Length: 209
Image 1 (spheres, rainbow, N blue to C red):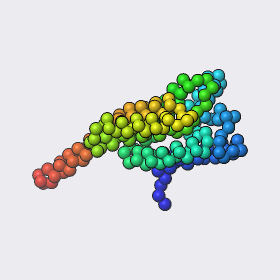
Image 2: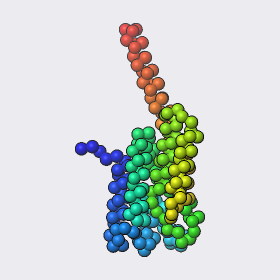
Image 3: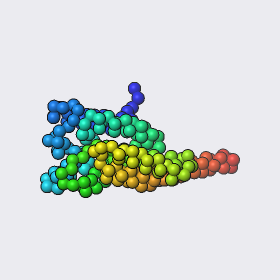
Image 4: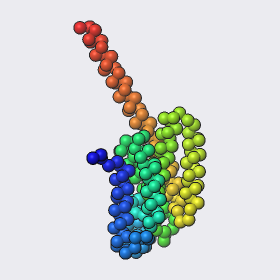
């Protein structure tokens, strides 16, 4: 039996959370605001009741069935690719930090805004992937960014989306992805050089004997 991938763990968490919330509000299609204000990002609850944990929990809370299904599709597409290019640790950092910062800046949406979902986090890993691919495939970074911006505009054209979370997640993911990918590549090259040097030293010792 194969081990679950990080992307699959995230999917399971999202669906478990959605099922629990749908049971609480007796509706499998739409989660009511009465439930969402305690677990999604309710700016009113954050401002006046200091529920700062919502910046985090909102990443795993979806507002309706169509919302979680569409986000799950994109998570599968980008998540598996991200696991090929980044370590689990780096993937987790990009995903969580992109989602968190996007949610914090979503306070600017207004006092009575209620938002949730993994879109910002997913767009974070998406932009990180774009950078990593531009390096690996030795193609112009601008062309990959152009693709990313087109995708952002397409997503943003839909009704009821959180543009602040989307754009912030994309930008944060790009910055983190660039830093973490470069760092991992540097460490990998150092390991290769160190391994080659140790092999070379062994050969010299063998010859001297």
